[in-house]
Length: 125
Image 1: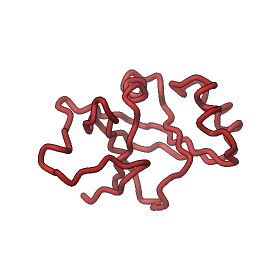
Image 2 (image 1 turned 90 degrees about the vertical axis):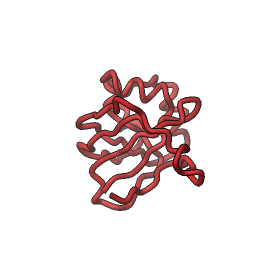
Image 3 (image 1 turned 180 degrees about the vertical axis):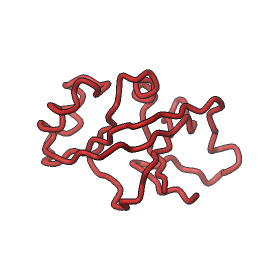
Image 4 (image 1 turned 120 degrees about the horizontal axis):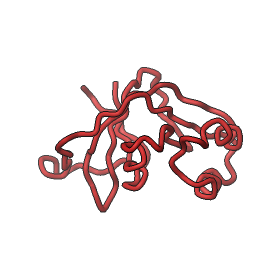
């Protein structure tokens, strides 16, 4: 099973160039059968640009997650700290393999009802 994840364009770039091997989240999907993340690059891109397989998901206090993942975070510690401020739990989705689509998909073309997920959206195969 797959989920669609909204990711800011600058972080999508870091994922595709290999600098970002962890995608951080405050909340995560409950379904344990999720193996693939489909990437929706938020505006101004507004397209589905690729996908990646999940290696594993780390769950700990934000400070512990940062220590384990900072080398391949693709973000600054200031940004990370601000994102998780006041949180006791952080999720880090470890990226296993990446497939950048040669032709990104505009989800608005054939689906006038498409809305980008605030966090994630389950996809049906």
